Structure formats: structure tokens, C-alpha cells
Image (cartoon, rainbow, N blue to C red; front, side, top):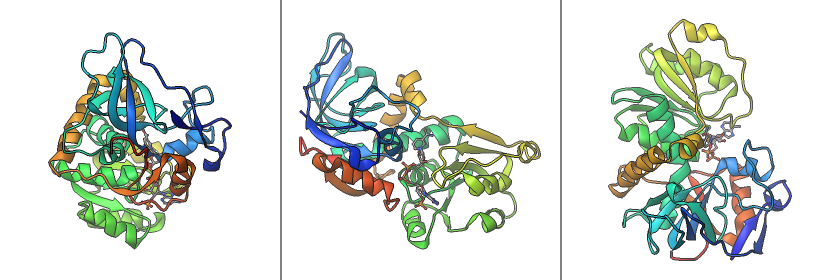
Length: 328
Ligand SMILES: NC(=O)c1ccc[n+]([C@@H]2O[C@H](COP(=O)([O-])OP(=O)(O)OC[C@H]3O[C@@H](n4cnc5c(N)ncnc54)[C@H](OP(=O)(O)O)[C@@H]3O)[C@@H](O)[C@H]2O)c1
């Protein structure tokens, strides 16, 4: 099979596409004929060697892939050959075939296509565990999503809206703000850190925000904490704009605010049953049109480096998906 490989850590251009041996499923494992695999922001960190979890090289990056089950190993009970599935993995998606534990495989509803499914996995999974599991979102909450033009951001806006929240989207410019509106945001802001607190307080009638899905870090995070409502929750998802600010505990104390960490992949690894249940629920929301994964562009597997470079440039609205040409 063909696979995009990390042989040496480096920029996206260091990925090489080569023929490697086909995987064979062991006990409890399945092999998927990959149709589509999405490119996620953390893949950049995997490829340059700065991500917290790195397998031995050479390996294929790619944290999710969809396709058709080609073969199943012994003791596989839930999944059978020919099933259309989505797999959430640590690495391995950028390849024509993926070997994965049965635990991490979710059957696809008939109406959800492979490209849509691949665009869906990690970003909605992150939004779900941030909003539902970590922050305990309920209908009527006011939810702020920062970095709203990106993959996790669009998923967060859609999911919070579908779960009955009033959604404020913070985006970098007017273009991205318009996109957030089409995703269901009730209010959009393009504020910088200097005005963000005042803008949020004014939008919420002085009450502040109940939950923030926070992607940016730096001064934005500091201002988000200051604009949080009594007993509000700020979920730390990433630091895409750069830095990790010094947090003033007094800002948390004064309004009983919780600052909450999120490592979404932990739920995949520690509680795969919960991960599958959440994914199944959201796939049904995709099938019924409540969620709509945004695909910015697809690239063939041979152009995996260009796909990753596209994400590195920070100009993506939604998801970049690598397609193999199989089963689509
Ligand atoms: N904690 C977890 O479990 C987990 C899981 C997945 C991802 N993440 C992290 O979440 C973040 C977003 O991931 P993604 O997959 O959504 O990435 P993405 O699709 O590439 O989007 C990147 C996001 O970062 C924003 N951004 C980048 N540079 C910026 C800058 N200089 N100033 C302001 N905004 C900037 C963009 O904002 P605009 O919308 O304004 O363009 C966009 O929303 C990343 O930091 C990623 O590592 C964490």
C-alpha cells in the first residue's frame, strides 16, 4: 500500500509518500481500506516532532480515517468486513490502509459520506468532550468559541448551538466571522485582546460568558477569564495564537470560575466506549443535518505534504481532507 511517512521530523515538505507493506490485523484489530483522512492542526506538531505523543519512525501521521473494513482479526465481535466506518487513532490515517483496535472504530450511518466522516472525527470529538464532558453545557448557556474559523472552532459553534446554547464566536477577521454566522453563531466578534472583555460584557448585559471553548491562549485567554460569568468554565483547548499567559488565580476565585484542561484524545484511549457513544450521537446529528462538517478542500494522498502545508498557512475554513480514491 501507499503511505505518507514521517522519516525525519521537519516541516510539512518532509513528508514522503512511499510503498510500504500492507498491515495484517492481530487479535482485536481490524484493517480499514482508507477512503479519506482529515488533516488536523496537531498533525503539524506530530510531523515536526514537537507533539507530546510520537511513535517510532517511520510512521504515518493522521488521527482519523474513514473507509471500508477489509479484514478483521480474531476476537473482533462488533465490526465485520465490508462495514463503512470511521476510526479515531493516534497516528496512521495518511495511508491507503489502517490497522486499528476494534474499540476505536465506529460504524457510519448510510447517509454520511467518507469525506464528511473524516472531516468530522477529531474536531467534533474535541468540541464534544470540551463542551459536554468537561464544561457540562446545558440549554440556555452562553458559550464563547474562540478561533471560530478553524476546525475545532466551527465544530464548537455548531455543537453548542445544536445543544441549545447562545453562541458567541470570536474570529480573526470579518470573513471568518461571517463563516461563523453561517455555522449558527448568534453573535460574532472580531475583537482583539484590548477590547474583548468589554465587548463580551456588553453582549451579555454585564453577566459574562458561561462557557468558553478556548483555542488561542495568550492575552485572549486572560481577557476571556475576566469576561466569564459567576461559576463559568473556561476550557483550555489550545494555544494557536502563540503563548501560554500567566494566570491570576484571583480572577478565578472572585467569581468561582473553573479553568479546565482538555486532552480530548485521552477519552479515546481511556474510555473508548464513551468516545464511541459520543461519536455515534454526533454522527446521527450529522445524518439529521444538525451538524454539518465543513470541508474546505480535498487533496490526493500523493499530495499529503501540500495538504499539511495548507493547514500550516492558517488559511483554512473548516477541514482539509486527504482522499485515496478508494471507495469514494
Ligand atoms: N486539547 C485538545 O484535545 C485538542 C484537540 C484538537 C485540537 N487542539 C488545538 O486546538 C487548536 C485549534 O485546532 P484546529 O484543528 O481547529 O486548527 P485549525 O483548523 O488549523 O484552526 C486554527 C485556529 O487557530 C486560530 N489561529 C491560528 N493562529 C492565530 C493567530 N495568530 N491569531 C488568532 N487566531 C489564530 C484560527 O483562528 P481563526 O478562526 O480566526 O482563523 C483557527 O481557529 C490548536 O491549537 C490545536 O492544537 C486541541
